[in-house]
Length: 423
Image (cartoon, rainbow, N blue to C red; front, side, top):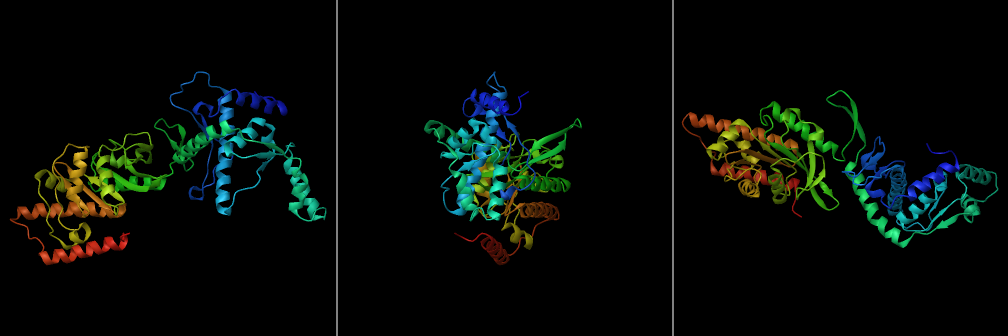
């Protein structure tokens, strides 16, 4: 146990001083957090440890220093946001209160921010502030600025160390990146054993939830049977990287959960999640790269569309709504081994500017500006495949007249242009 009073802060200084900058990879998210109005909600703190734990002498020093560094990182992030809003850089940074009783933290703050930090030698700054406000109210000072100026001379300066400042520049950005990946807050769930556990929620929780709901609906209508098929959505770029959320490999669509959805970049490098992404991730990425108007991709294994894919039969334009929703015939891609770039390129070629294609000897792929449209296209494609199959059994298929197809393709193109105007 730590001692009480000043001895506790002295022990904190000693423990933090025994560990190098960066706490050997340990990150803390305690105390003040980085302001983010896009992710409001309950946040609980914790530590993030390097895996595997490669240093054998991890102890209290790592936790103490990581906690002090985490507070300094959060203060720098909030200071930068405040300065950005104000449109000017702060001319003076002053801190006070109990944290200044650990000299290590004040020095850390100066190194992390990279500027001089002045601190009040007394820990009782709240009481001092109340006194200055009261003194101003009764006329002791002409203004609060004058009152604050009366004690400014007692503030003690701490300068950043150039070498430590440079080292903390990289460490700070690593902490910010980790905070972004963890995102959101904490949520509780029951494990399979019934034990209540805590998991950090995702910064893309809404998108993951939408994918889960889509998978459940698709499974109910036999469009994604078992663990077949996969679903993805395009996400907003993350620090310049194009990224997507996609179902994890081998997951049952009917039982899909939010933790079964992972986030990867367009190089299929992991961004968030512990599972391997779908084996068809390259196909999803290729479609997003080729089609800027696409916001969601669904690879289905619905029965009749799969029959047409195995038979190598293109579904011609046979119903008016098919052309308006899909853009024309549903073409079949050349066979390629699943999960390969060759398959991805072949599918993109078959898809073209349309919203659906069949994957040779495999299944179907449907796209849309969002998940709702992609699901609607999947349902229409499966229904058209069924109609095409059953009409063929009756002796033939009457394709729409070319002039009708062209008129409806014009409607399809106009809808796309209205929603995604050329830039």
